[in-house]
Image 1 (tube, rainbow, N blue to C red):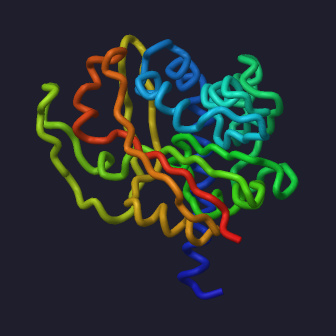
Image 2 (cartoon, rainbow, N blue to C red; image 1 turned 90 degrees about the horizontal axis):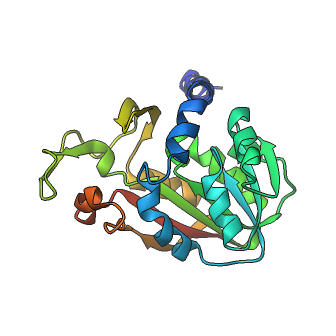
Length: 253
């Protein structure tokens, strides 16, 4: 193996271990953060997410399920749900909340299910948290049926590289760094007495598209959802700049 290829492989393994270690450390933080009703952005987009997924009766897998709120949405919509995460504490919390029908501690790259097991796979705000997006998508592709659908949510790549000038609803959004390139991020958010240490990877949309293409997916739908400002008036600025990007992809023959 060439030296540069060995170095790239070694860094990927190191990064993957560091990502999982981070989320294991902050698992209790995230459970408190995610389960506080109306607390974070998820709640302002929840109804739109339900509509985008749509009702179903097949088998669905929530990859990187965290404490289980995405799995609970799938379950409410009628799916038979498997909740999977590499962090054991998250899977235990998801099970405690009766989030799914089946549970497993595993990475997206090594899902412990037979090939072509699922009609729907959801990766909700998880691909930003893995070092090797391609390996994760390849693992999901193997577990999906040929007629299945992958639903992805990510923080909009453009948002990662900038900020609003101030707290005004009409404040300008300023690009602080180049949109292009891949970099690791780490930061702490605080709100209503709770704090959360986030960490993951910021990269442009073309990186995700290339990984989907390489894994054998074709994008069939894309949304840049707007928040429900009736529930969260403080999020009105995100009606001007998209906070999230959602897409659906289908396996290629």
